Picture: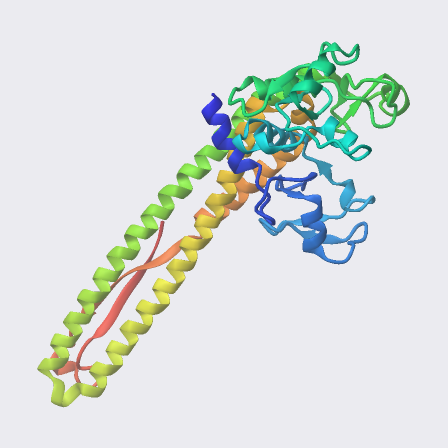
Length: 376
């Protein structure tokens, strides 16, 4: 499990724009995540509320929230994965103690290197500060993790610590319920003020239901990925066959032209040009198909991995927060997938048919090209 965590977090924690670990990750409706600063740099001037932008990864249209980019959903799930990666990284041993660093700004004492991380306080601590922290009344029950630890329990500790969330509107109350009509978390006061007559469920129960549905989403995307891979392989094989076929046709044409060269040099050249043009055009179209299919596969892979990680590592709040978007995005990808699969048609072969000599007055004496289109 620890090795699987390491492999997936390296893939999921990197921002597509800056190619670095996420900093303040913001989640778009298409389920792609970017650093807030990267989005600001990418979009240039401050986008206004209601403006339509395009996802830098998949180009899906996104409407800017009323609050601006800061109003996008924050991806706490990936933020937690970044934190796990930081804690378990071998490079983290060069990090200064947060407590010492704050003191060093007021005194001449240099900050000591951190050796542990407090899950509840989100602080890196040196050996001395760790001892003080555990003796402190507020920190005696906190979980301290050794830096560089390559264990799954690091993630579980962070996941457990994020299990209780305060209400954004009523900070003194804890979120306990989820409104399925509004797709929002709610505390007791929120239920009374904003969600009367709505369908309300406990976070635990709705998360359990969503987790079961998430398995179906993953299965559907897996099927699409498998189908896309098969289509790509088939297309690559057809390209190879077509190249061989076109080369064989070219040899036949050359042989026929040699037989009648003195009479049909011009016609023979025209046929060769036609064949080569067809070959270039078709290969170019196929290459574009391959690239589009690979792009489609990358979108499916990214979404599948994200869903798989959500299935095994997300909190109930994580899952409730984004499941409706996950489900909707899954259906969108399925529609795009089915459309792409149905649209694939290609010119699969060319043949040379030598013209009979008695037809030379009305046809190209060398022959003519034939071909056919076939749907995959």
